[in-house]
Length: 87
Image (cartoon, rainbow, N blue to C red):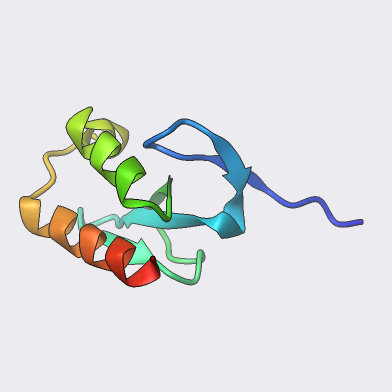
C-alpha cells in the first residue's frame, strides 16, 4: 500500500492528506499563486478547502509569516474566490 503524504493546514493546524488541501506557492520572483497541480516550483504552504481556515490564516497573518513577506489584499481576494468556487 502506497503511503499518502500528510501536510498541515495553515488555518486550523490539522494534519490532512495532501490531496485534501490547496497549495499556495511563493515563486522565486516573489509572486504568490495557487498551485492546482501541486508541482509548481517555489516555497509551498497548504490550506484546507474551507473559507474558515483561510480567514483564520489571514487574521493571524500566518501566510505572511510562512512566506516572510507582506501579502496584498488582492491575493487574499483571489484565494477567497477559489474557496467559494470549491464549496
